[in-house]
Structure formats: C-alpha cells, structure tokens
Image (cartoon, helix red, strand yellow):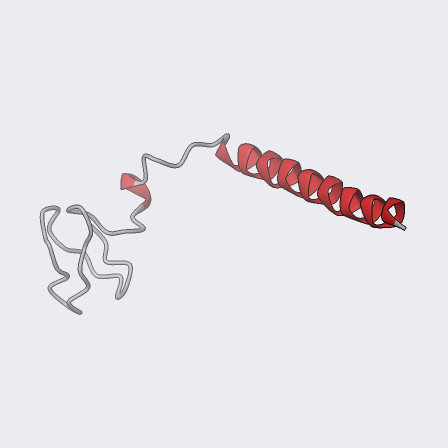
Length: 73
C-alpha cells in the first residue's frame, strides 16, 4: 500500500509506514482509494439534495419567525 503521508510503498499488512511512521487505519492507508469502499458514485447528489432540503427548511423557519413577529404587533 502507498503511504498517503510520504508516498512510499509499504507491505499490505503494515500497521505503520516503515519510512515516515504514518499510522495506517484498519490495516490500510486512511485515504487509500483502493480501500474506500464506503464511497459511492451517487452519494454526492444525495449530499447536495440533503443540503438543499436543510436550507429550504431553514428559510421556512426564518420566514415563519418574521411573519409571527409582525402578527404579534
């Protein structure tokens, strides 16, 4: 595996980089693309959609507070 810190090649079962001492997580480099199985190609769209929904919710809440403050007087 390639060390993300120094770029040197290490054995596949190394816990630490033999060149710079970088600690590998879960038996592989933390940002080693070959072992990033949790990343899916469609996940970026879901994250963006989630942010849009959150900001729309926030906008509705702000408008509700403003309208409620005007109706109070």
